[in-house]
Structures are given as C-alpha cells and as structure tokens.
Image 1 (cartoon, helix red, strand yellow):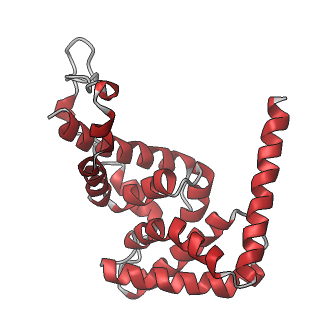
Image 2: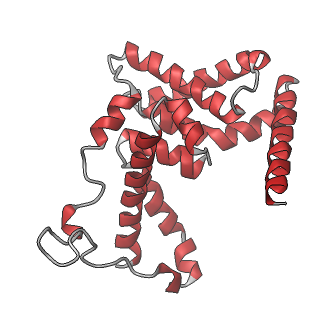
Length: 219
C-alpha cells in the first residue's frame, strides 16, 4: 500500500509538471510568473557562484530565463523542469564567468571549501578530553522558545544574512536544497558534483546557519 501511494504521488507530480510545461509552451503568463517566483532567488545564488558581482549575476539570470523560453519547445522531460532550468543558469553563468576570467568549475570551489571547518574548532571538546569532538556546550532547545520569537522578522533576517555570507558553493547548495526544494540528485545533476560533495556542502552550510541562529536565539 505504501509503495502504491508513493507511485500515485510520483505520477501526480509528473502530471502536474507536464501540465505546467504545456501552459508555459502556450505562453501562459501566470504560469511563467509562478515559475519565476519559485526559482529566481535560487538561480541568482547559483549565478553568484560563477561571477564577480550581484549585478552581473542578475544579468546572467535574465539571460537564463530567455534561454528557458527559447528552449521550452525542445524540453523532453528527461529531467525535472527544475533541474533543467537550473542547468541552464549554471551553463549561462559558466560562460559569463569564463569571460570574466573566473572560470573555476563548481567542483573546484566545492573541493576548496571542504578544507575549511564548518564551525570554529573551539566549539568542540579537544583531543585528549573526555568526549573529544563533542560540543563544549550543546545548543539550547529552541522548541521551548515562544513561537512568535522563532517567527519574528529579525530571525528570518538572521537566516538570510547567514546564507548570504556563506562561501559560494555552500550558498548555492543550501539555496537549492532548502529554499528551492531541490532533491540531492537534482543538485548533483545541475551542478555536476558528486553526492559526497553535495552532502558535505549542505552539512557545512546548515551548520553555519544554525550557528548564526544560536547566537541570535541563545543570546
């Protein structure tokens, strides 16, 4: 029964996407606006990993959307629409980044960031102590905080700033996974990185964002 339910959900999602693609091909402005609203912020984060400035990244995303519109007739649904769109912005950003002499592949950025600790080593017990490697002080239980505190605008601003301050590769992966809702496979396919790279980058990004939230919520 569980397997049948999963198959039905998968078939339903595929049907919804096919309908969305058909609407986009028919020039449905409302459908296009919904896709732009859903994907644009993450596309911008992806572009920023390849070019020098936000202004250039905005140009890359605009160019990518033009590529999406021109390529819809050729989209064969071998991957999800989301993966296809992000692949276009990645390729567009790489081309622009190459012209700007910033042509390092994403995998190189990812490998470099793996050498940097996700959190300050001082937050963990040093070698030789009991429970070496564990937290010096465990994070507070945020579930005890009033709901309005967690939902406060300033808390969202803390998260937003923390994401914006992440290294390029980490920012891209967390934006795709936790903001755009991409699956791990979709991220790996769009960015052409291994599953291991994706897991490490996501873990490090989430750890840094959590640390920023700790400082804000724990006072």
